Length: 470
Image (cartoon, rainbow, N blue to C red):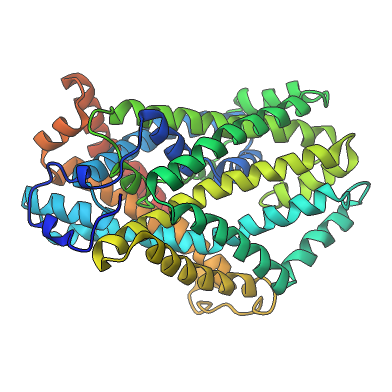
């Protein structure tokens, strides 16, 4: 399924038939499950509930849904289109498109930005995935039962302060990701998501069902779906813009990589909309799973990043059958992180196969080990290097550890920059006839997408990009 070592010869030819030389998704459903698996991750289960809580609930959710429509779906369509048209890794797909459309070859850097972003994100994402693995054992063993807030906080602090334990779980998570990616498109990625995604949905519905027994489900639903615009700030609107972008795995070259395996007969627009709707539905279900438990225990919905690893464990420890459902929740979190981790490693592995002529196993091993090693710096920044802030001479970055810097650099610079460049490339640079052929939309729908990706999306992403910098 992979591109052979002599695939560079293909670059001098046309784009037609490029995908035929490689592995393809077996069906539209397979692509939807894979793309949804990439999009559904810690951003849905961990980040969406706490940023919603911090920004007032319903009004934030409404703005978030609008941002999915005007930013998320158009850019996802553009990324998938680029991947399928080029039929190679993100970097080489854009190189081929630039050659055919007579564009500056430097546009291939758009793909490189995305590949780099995904690689850097995975290095610390794996560390957080390791936290989830650790908490399965912590919750299942009953260590949280009846604990006070201080005691639960000490459990989390104890985990972060132990580099050896963090390294163990980080290593296990990266090994899980590498095992799937090494097996290729059909045997690895597709088979994994066909099991993990249905299991994730079932687990999420089970936790939602449990939350309905708390007596506070109606309060949670009102918090999520009744807008109170007095609680929405300008900052909250920009957070919604940024999160809509992050949660769909945009700007990471993932959708370009997955799009390169998409058969020509499958509609890019329909699949992109389906993935976006499912991803948003999972985020909302996560809110309905988490907030009833939070309200039932008199806790704060705006508890910040500690909502999942401190606030919820405290709640599970006080509730009937809390150990069982708490364990299920963290298994759910692992599945979400795992499917996303797989997608983050895929673009760099795909590039190594093509560019260096390496087989998939060697490409996965090499990229995975480098990513794992980089993750060790994030682990140490949580304990032994906690006082190390390499870029403190820059006021905005003062006091940020290596972990913080990787998060800031990817989320605030690389992702919006990559998305902005994709929107500009699709809206202003690429051949319009070629895009019309690839998207295969009616003239009216194509014009709607084209106007959105040309004018509205770049402005919105540009605002987020500038705001994050200043």
